[in-house]
Length: 156
Image 1: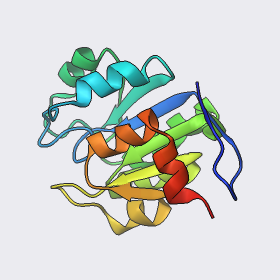
Image 2 (image 1 turned 90 degrees about the vertical axis):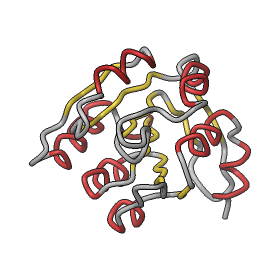
Image 3 (image 1 turned 120 degrees about the vertical axis):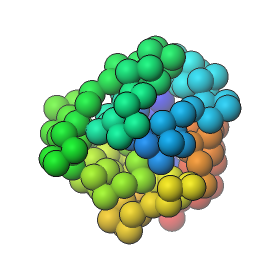
């Protein structure tokens, strides 16, 4: 579990990390350098799940490489699938990271929502629901590894 106090906000007690895959965790279905090591550290603090429509067909391979569970969402109803998944976990204990329109509802429900504005870009729907936006997945994961960065950005 990851606990943090951000002035002006409720204290956070994070038990789960939900990751979108394409454009968030991966670039064209492939993991960027440094992600695996960061996920290994984060797994000592919380459970990590991959939620993906698996556009490039590499979801199972990525999940296996990271040692995390995968949940494949429908390409037609992915938004609802992701929202249902987070709702079943108790959203108050969830940090969600995404970039697509089908991530917006998941980001809205999460205690902490991080949008990735990477090579694929970020939908405005996802960006509107985010608490913070970063350039890439390593920047997002580093916020969880070094939570004082979140405090510095999100305090009111």
